[in-house]
Length: 133
Image (cartoon, rainbow, N blue to C red; front, top):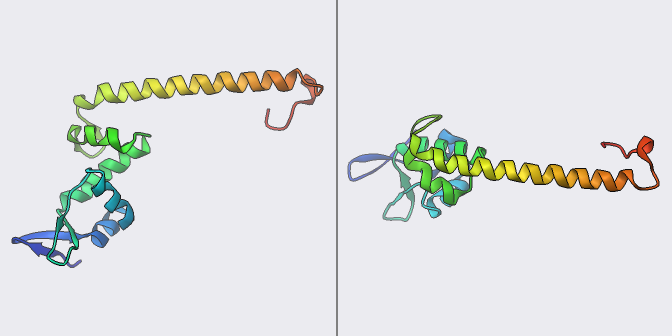
């Protein structure tokens, strides 16, 4: 792997970060635009990342997989120091989002029950339910 060097430090190009993380260069640029990671620019305008960006992107992916939006992730990044382990500072935000998801699930269950009730009250009758009911 060829590494760029700025100011005597070894930095990674966006393609190298992409291959180490499995995240597309486009998403890496998006994360940078969202302020989730930072890059330095070479004299030709190329992005160069510290090696720490690789682990930072893994943390971002973990939080995205948990359904958190990038605006919330930016608040939580300081609460992640080890892969897969969050510091206590993340807990209140995560609890808030868990409650919101539970509320959404309850709404969806209620909506599903209402729809099923409409179907059941139709001419189909309970013994002729639609497939998947």
